Amino acid sequence: MKHAYLILAHNEPTLLSLLVDRLDDVRNDIYIHFDRKLSQLPELKTQHAGLFILTDRIDVRWADVSMIEAEYKLFHAVFSSGQIYAHHHLLSGVDLPLKSQDHIHDFFATHQGKEFIGLSQWELSRRADQGLHYYHPFARSFRGHGGGFWCKRGLRYLIVKAQVVLRLRRNTSIPFRKGGQWVSITHELLCYLLEQEERAYQIFRATFGSDEYFIPTLIAGTPFMDRLFDPSDEAHGAMRYIGWRGDDKLIDFSAKDFPVLQETEYLFARKFNSRDKAFLDDILALSTP
Image 1 (cartoon, rainbow, N blue to C red):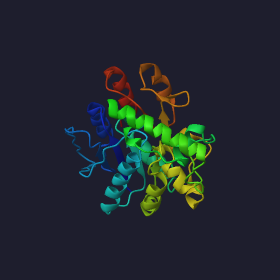
Image 2 (tube, helix red, strand yellow; image 1 turned 45 degrees about the vertical axis):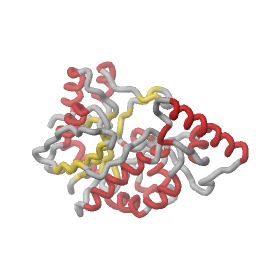
Image 3 (cartoon, one colour; image 1 turned 30 degrees about the horizontal axis):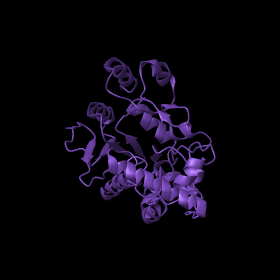
């Protein structure tokens, strides 16, 4: 069966072009959602894979539910195609594969039916608790500039603090689970997530930082939990090497990281930039057939 690559892109057109080239295989279809803030889209072409650029685009904002909305745009595009895929790989536009397509397809064929979703092994932090259990106005404006931005950020802070003092908690019956946003899921799970779309928006609208809780929370308590590839290790569970430093700082990989990236068993890595061509050439060589 074919695979679908679902890409959320917002910058680094050179890197995105390299990613598409690595995925250009007759066994793949590629779906790309570009952030609506992009006024000029890069020209992308494939020779073997199907390439589908979404025209219905979301203005994606950091920590806002718009990230989930963009993911759902990709899910709907895949479902509407009528094609049933073995796995759907959600990537960002600054990811790259670390293995060849032959290796990736063989790996998923060996683990057919498994869901590759990384689950965090930590309890919800105080910040996460506030982000998910209280109403957050102006979440779309958390990152910005100008007087209006600071006014909204300050007002949001006061509104959330007032809810904490008054104990006006929401989503109290939801078993929130944290995990990686970037997943590889089966057709069955994609269909389930589409069935849960309205509920997902009811839970996560006006929350803060929902993208890492979205899929893990929706599958909590369902049979999909029994299909997880590795529920005990977040990185291994998703087969993705992500450049976290500490608890919440995400760095761009550089040449000094190459030995680890070369040796890892993981299939994909993020995040990269296009500044060091020699380093990128080395990374691309890892996924060369």
